[in-house]
Length: 94
Image 1 (cartoon, rainbow, N blue to C red):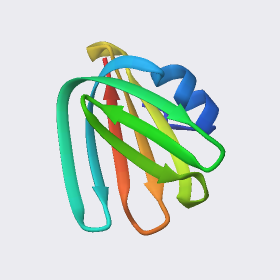
Image 2: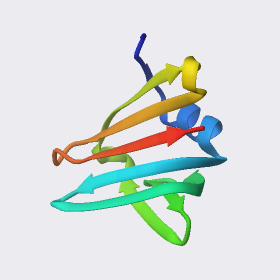
Image 3: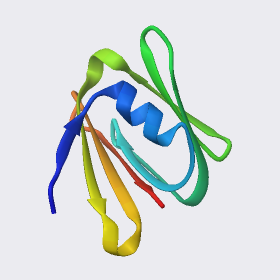
């Protein structure tokens, strides 16, 4: 499988409104959502990930990278967002 680094705007375009599973580990807190409606947005300084009724706001300056890995055999794309404080957000879109 090939893993690709992508831009924040590419991530938002691909996940603007979709069905996904999300796992976030931020500053020692872990949250997980399975098969939820996902929306992504951005403003001048933050990336907003809305999973169900929960909003994650991540500072754009704290994002180190977004990696995209497709799994065509199971019709899923995994996005791994790495954050400066050692946290990460994994989004599996199907």
